Image (spheres, rainbow, N blue to C red):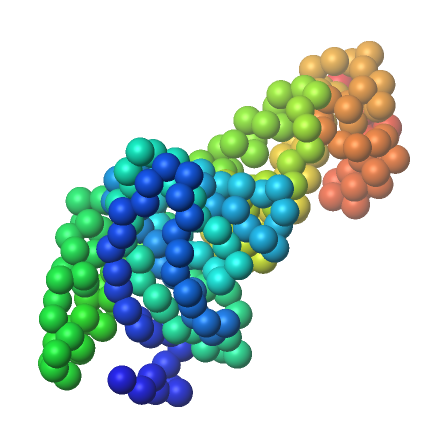
Length: 256
């Protein structure tokens, strides 16, 4: 059936497949298509050609977008997968919709209905498209009853910052944890918190720096910068003055 130019994205086909350990998921898609992959049972590894060395592990219940250049390998003896080939208008939808974790008891029946519905009439075609949009509605909204990915990542950022000598956080690493591209993660993070990831991280670090200066009167600014996770004292001083209106040395002197 011809896809209307008015659509932003549309389901083209739905399939079910079993994937053996270390076997590659072999699905041919076009440049303007993506796979929406649902892991019913088992575990897979995604290797992203656009980010060499970046690998993600996904398990039963996970749903993810898979691009044409991505490679999916089975990690269990047998992994069962549902996947939808989705046409996307790349001019109007640069990034696919952000996906959130939803209850598997709600998601699983929708995938099975999508797969089993007949497609031999216009009515059945419409039914399949309706089920597809119901699935998208379920997995693209943040569920208040579930501690969403953003809450988990925000908690991880704050916990990370209070630990001394931890490796610096990057947006790419955080985006990978959320199963998003860095650009889509940054947009979703800002919608959720009102800050970009970098602004939020720096805000947490400044807060940590102020706590250190209040608690340890004899601490040096270099030590404060190091323990709060800044790369160097100069950058810390510059950012602190920009955020707080005074240099950290002045702030420290004015403490009771």
